[in-house]
Length: 101
Image (cartoon, rainbow, N blue to C red):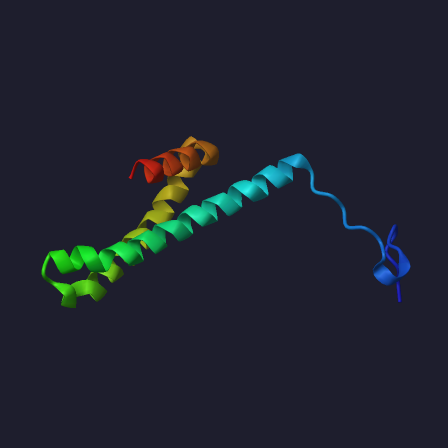
């Protein structure tokens, strides 16, 4: 069996530490995923109440489908906008819109 250079037999070596830049990027991605999770949690909790007050509780599946469809349509739009304006700037704007909403 071939040994990789620098690897210790038995795999007893320590894992390489993450650089601060990689750590910040990873934390930012985790926070963005948490915000996306909160978005769907808030929507799934609030939509039955909203639809119930409008008197059309039987239309709840259509409202949920429209919500998922709208989210799906905006993904390519955000992709193109991030290419034009930059990913960091667009992420800041998206988080600001979420917090204001």
